[in-house]
Amino acid sequence: MLANSVPKNFLRPDLLVPVPLHKSTQSRRGFNPSVEIARTLADRWSISLDTRNCFRTRNTAVQKSLGPKDRAENMCGAFRIKKDFQGERIAIVDDVVTSGATVSEIAREIVARGAGSIEVISIARTSICTH
Image (cartoon, rainbow, N blue to C red; front, side, top):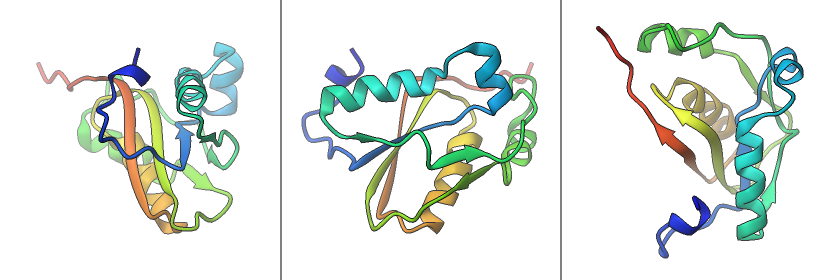
């Protein structure tokens, strides 16, 4: 359904990069929702999916109970990119975006490795409840 809801003038990315889980979280859950979403989009759009280039450097605290500033600090330095991008259009795929701290940190790393542009694709956007 997500792949069908994209506007016709949407410039498809060259590569989809799902938000990685830490190894321990991946092992506990048995799957990564962002990878499953990205896999469906890659198949539907006939574009590449890269699940091995971006990885977590450490297991971060659960973001749910953190405010925006703490979320950004929690994600700072939490991701690394293994290889360079050659001006490619990259789409970061996440299941839910709240503060944007996770995708912003990944985007920072991807830009540093030579991406031409970055988009973020998610199935949900939420806000932080402060009361």
